[in-house]
Length: 396
Figure 1 (cartoon, rainbow, N blue to C red):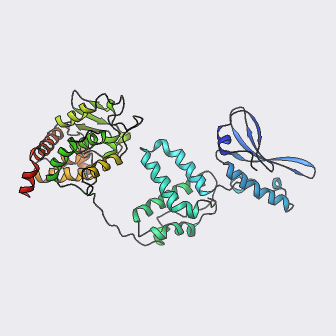
Figure 2: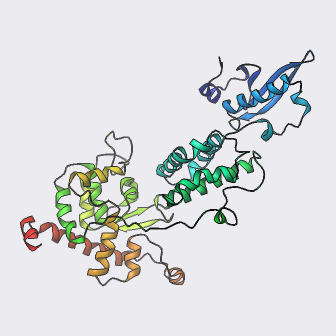
Figure 3: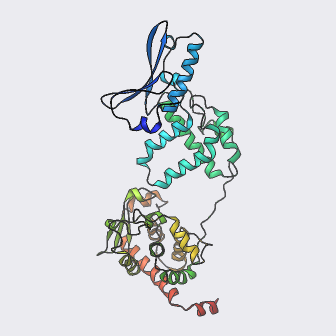
């Protein structure tokens, strides 16, 4: 039975040698460094062979390397006599290397959702086929086994998976765990082996602008944090993640400005949001509920989860639409019912201008003009909310 556990290996700090089984030891140095040692007897002499350091080499990988080395001993070969590159002696699986990659890059990713997308997509589509294979042995055939079944069925997911496999294998090569070209690379390789994907653009289901007023009146009848978040979503045309993760220190309520930091924006640029009177009233209702989060979760331990907005819409019978669709609703309304220039409307959505020359010369974020636009949007919503339901039905 194994003597070491993953938890022990990860947390032990006391210097010394800790035995696992069949000659495998974990040696912890005074500085906290951890190295795997294979101790064996040959010709009456004791030998210690290094197998790499933790966490680069996991407990599981060290045991697999041990199996290979003991087989060499059984066949009469001395492991010390042959070449000892770490990549040749330690079998690191794709799962282990992918988890190391995610752990390494997690701090630089903008939100937890990106981490979850990596973890879930690899778990569902890659690990069943490549998870336990050595990163040193994965080739084009193995990558195609993952991609071919989903390449046309779920093209966006398949493309992202190809890129993620490529990144993991590139990292493995940088750590000298594999050699040669990356079998998941696209240009000049997989682009010659996979057919062109059929791209079908799917638009977010957006509520017609004429229905938004009634929806906001229904939201007002709910006494919940999610309902208030949904109201601010509609009034500002921001993304769900920006709304749910709103922090009090981002707001200048006296001047009616909400500044969202670059780390929370999709385009990785700070974005100033002008707050209309209705938006300020929503924020006033949330004041004092949490010292940090404008919209805290039920346990008051973190920000409101994004799916809370969708559940609120479902509760009000608006399940046909999605929260993100209100951005499209706002943009369509602005184009059809106002005279504001296109760049003002696009900046209200924190979109980059398509014309690079125009974007280079127009350094302003047009805050004052966007404030007027959002005030007109709020007035339009209020006008619809003030119309009795019976009149709306009669007009329809």
